[in-house]
Every structure is written in structure tokens, then in C-alpha cells.
Amino acid sequence: MTQAFDYDLLIIGAGVGGHGAALHAVACGLKTAIVEGGEMGGTCVNRGCIPSKALLAASGKVRELRDAHHLKALGIEVGGVGFDRDAIAGHAEMVVTKQREGLIGSLKRLGVDVLQGWGKVVAAQKVSVATPDGIEKSITAKDVIIATGSTPFVPPGCEIDGTTVFTSDHAVKLESLPQWIAIIGSGYIGLEFADIYSALGSEITMIEGLPQLMPTFDPDIAKVAQRTLISPRDIETKTGVLATKIIPGSPVVIELSDAKTKELVDTLEVDACLIATGRVPVTQDLALDKLGVELQRGYIPVTDQLNVVKGDQPIEHLWAIGDATGKLMLAHTASAQGVAVVETICGRPRVVDYNSIPAAAFTHPEVSFVGLTEPQAKAKGKAEGFEVSAVRTYFKANAKAIAEGETDGIAKVIFRPDNGQLLGVHIFGIHAADLIQEAANAMVQKTPVQSLAFSVHTHPTLCEVLDEAFKRAAGAGAGH
Ligand SMILES: Cc1cc2nc3c(=O)[nH]c(=O)nc-3n(C[C@H](O)[C@H](O)[C@H](O)COP(=O)(O)OP(=O)(O)OC[C@H]3O[C@@H](n4cnc5c(N)ncnc54)[C@H](O)[C@@H]3O)c2cc1C
Ligand SMILES: NC(=O)c1ccc[n+]([C@@H]2O[C@H](COP(=O)([O-])OP(=O)(O)OC[C@H]3O[C@@H](n4cnc5c(N)ncnc54)[C@H](O)[C@@H]3O)[C@@H](O)[C@H]2O)c1
Image 1 (cartoon, rainbow, N blue to C red):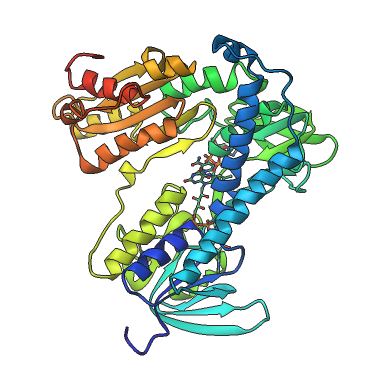
Image 2: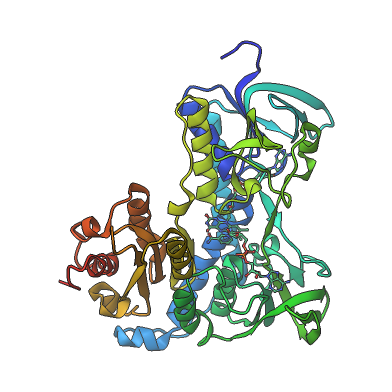
């Protein structure tokens, strides 16, 4: 290390991105510190992935055990199934605590210095930290990574009280089970919480500003998912309308306006409202404007190698990763970016291939994908002059899915027929979040469908749904 600096690497923000970067930096021999102003572990551990997946696990079991028709088909009868809301909330809290302690322990074991306080970027290689006891410390590092994450976006006119109107920050605590809840937004959070609340007996009205639900999913997948995740459940949907005013209380009053004309079209009175309308970066208090950095809708502008950009020039030694950069706001993106930056710092330049990063909604059943949707692939094909093909295979033809009695599902593989390149893979069905990994690995390694069609899959497994799709895509004949 150059003696002039306190550290080789200083990271602002101990979320999944900052943590991933710190672990890799230590493995690469860098003297590392991490600054955290809030709770160690950030969004994912405390208010995001972890508590929401614990709630989905418990509520999913309630749904399964209450599905007498499904159980009867397997020859099983159960009596009444009860649950304790407080205990389910306690389960989520326990998982959060374990994960957070694990994260803190790993940093300690590896010798990463944890500095409590809010960081500001004074210069590319200098950060000031306001500690809880009111002291302002100045720290220097050869390289600085900003990993300050994001927070829920609340649309203008919508008011939050944390009990009747709330965001996912409160919802993950499951402090109540409203009889009728409006969920604003049908993205990841809206869908996952619709799964939780509907399993635990709440009636739901889901409001989406765009013309269709789940607007970021491949349209075929969104259609099939809606047939299972929305239509048969106690979920009413309203699309093409924006929540323009939300007043907390009993009842909660919600004004809905036409997304195009902006005219008021409906007023709802419900017991509670979850606002799940996206997230905004936490970047305002970093003093980046003093360095001449212009935030883009709050996000930190970065180069492909994740250097912070001033004007159109990268700032040497200053990097940004994770939700604060606004690129695929997922936990594994944040840590992959952290690892890439550390590699680049260590003289092995690395960029993240966003197109091969998989994503999943952990509903019952799950939705997952990697790469482009069919409309996106077709637009790319048109622009670049190549044909696009798609094949579909179904869980109802898969032996393992039939044995499980879980046959609602589809896999869709979008590819180039001229060279077999995968463009996108989309799965809806049981364990879709695990199944997508094979496709993500193939995308990153650029394995064509002709080769994938020859890779041997265990029988009988759900993986054979993709196996069959790859074989069809390669024109090698369906099935076995
Ligand atoms: C309900 C919910 C469920 C989710 N589920 C999933 C999922 O299943 N899978 C998935 O991949 N992603 C999921 N996500 C997204 C995931 O949580 C985020 O993409 C991820 O947490 C981003 O990590 P990060 O390190 O960029 O930021 P964060 O996790 O937000 O961490 C940033 C940290 O920086 C700290 N900080 C901010 N400013 C400063 C400062 N100036 N000084 C010091 N510290 C500062 C904050 O206190 C925070 O701890 C979910 C999100 C939500 C809300
Ligand atoms: N399983 C996962 O990986 C997972 C789970 C939860 C959250 N996340 C991450 O958290 C981020 C935030 O999730 P999210 O679901 O809040 O955002 P999102 O961007 O996925 O969905 C928000 C939805 O709200 C709609 N909307 C926005 N304003 C509206 C309004 N006023 N009225 C009606 N509809 C409106 C948008 O059209 C959009 O469909 C996501 O980007 C995702 O990356 C990931």
C-alpha cells in the first residue's frame, strides 16, 4: 500500500454491494474499510431480499397446506391449517438477525475496519465520516467505492404513516394483516407481497399505471403468470391508472387517475395500502456535486468499468456500484459490480455483463428470466439484421412436475436460429428461480443451443424443462 493513504480501499455503504466488494478486496490483499451510517447489511439483509423471502416461505407453506384440492390429488388430507402472524413475522426477523450477524462476523474475521457514520466524498481519494457522537473524521484511501443503495420511491401526493399506508420497509415486518389491502405497483415487490398477503387471507386490489400487469416480464410469461398468480386468487386488478393521492387513516383513501389523460377516475377506500412503485438512489448527501458530478435522476453516472463520471471523463480512483448506479437493481448485481471494481483496481480490468444477470420473483410459483424479452429480441434483430426464434416447453409434460402435482409452468427460450446464440430465457413455474441459473451460465459463456442440447440433465428433474427447450431450439427433436 502507498503509505500516504489510510487504506487501499474505502467503501461507503455496507449493503450487499459494499460487503461483496470488501470480501473480494481482502481476498486480493487490499487493506479495506467500510463506512455504514445505518444498519449493517443495508436493504437486502434488513428490509429487502431476506425478510421478504422468509415471509414468502412461511406464507407459501400456508397456501400449500390450505390447498385441499392439490393435497388430495397426492393422497393427503389435512385438518384446518392455522398460523400465527406474529410468529411468522418473528421468523423473518430471526432470519434477518442471523444474516446480519453473519455479515458483521465475516467482515470482522477478515480484518475489514467498520466505521460507523455517514460518509461524504470530499475528493476522489478522501471521505469525511460524520460519526454518531458528532465527530467528523477524514479518511484517505487509494480507491473509494460508493455503494449507498436505494430507498422506496413514494409518488407525489401519496402520504405514508407506516401503519395504514406503508412501503416495503414496513411491510417486511408484517405488523398487521389488513382485511383489504391496495398494492400500488405490479413489479417485483407488488407481486411478491400479493403472494404473501393473498396466502394469509387478505383481499387485494392491485393498481398498475401501465396498460398491463408485470410490465417488465416477457408478455407471454406475464400472461401465463397472471392466470396462476392473480386471476384465481382474491386479487382485483386495475391497470392504466396511477395512484395520485393516498391519505392514510381508517379507511385509507386512494385517488386513481387515468395514466394518459390524468383525469380522476376512481376513489378507493381500503384498510391499508402498500406502495411498491420502485426505488430511488441514496446519493443526495454524498456532496458529489462539489466534485462536479451531475447525478442522472439521482443515479451516479459511471463508465462501463464503474468509474464515477464527471462531464464525460472518468474520475480516477472513485467508483460506484449497486442500486446507486441504477443498473438492474438486484443484490447479486451489486456484489458482481463490487467484485468487478476490485478486479479492475488490482490490474485485471473487468466489466459486468448485465445481459447475463438472472432475475426472479419468488412468488408461488416463481418467475425468472435472463436476457431479452421476445419484443426486445425482435427489436434488436431488426436493428442488427438477424432473425429471432422462440420455443416453449411446458411443466405439464415434465415427469418431476407431474409427480409434485405442480404442472402450471412454461419455459421460453429465445435465440438466433442462424448461430444458436441465446438471447433470452424466461421461466414461470415451481423452482423457476433455481432453474434459470443454467441459462444464465450459458448466456455468459455464449454457449449456443446446439451445444446446450447435448448437455446431459438428471432424470427426473425440473431441469429437463430447459433441456427439452434447448433440444427443440437446436432442431434435435423434442423430448427423449
Ligand atoms: C422488499 C425487497 C425485496 C428484494 N428482494 C430481492 C431479491 O429477492 N433478490 C435480489 O437480488 N434483490 C432484491 N431486492 C433488491 C436488493 O435489496 C438491492 O438491489 C440491494 O440491496 C442493493 O444493494 P446495495 O449494496 O447497492 O445497496 P443497499 O443494500 O441499499 O445498501 C446501501 C447501504 O449504504 C448505507 N449508506 C447510504 N448512504 C450512506 C452514507 N452516505 N454513508 C454511509 N452509509 C451510507 C445505507 O445505510 C445502506 O446500508 C429487494 C429489495 C426490496 C426492497
Ligand atoms: N425478487 C427480486 O429480485 C426483487 C424483489 C423485490 C424488489 N426487487 C428490486 O426492488 C426494486 C423495486 O421494486 P418495485 O416492485 O417497487 O419496483 P418496480 O419498478 O419493479 O415496479 C414498480 C411498478 O409500479 C408501477 N407504478 C409506478 N408508479 C405508480 C403509480 N403512481 N400508480 C400505479 N402504478 C405505479 C410501475 O409502472 C411499475 O410497474 C426493483 O427494481 C427490483 O430490482 C427485487
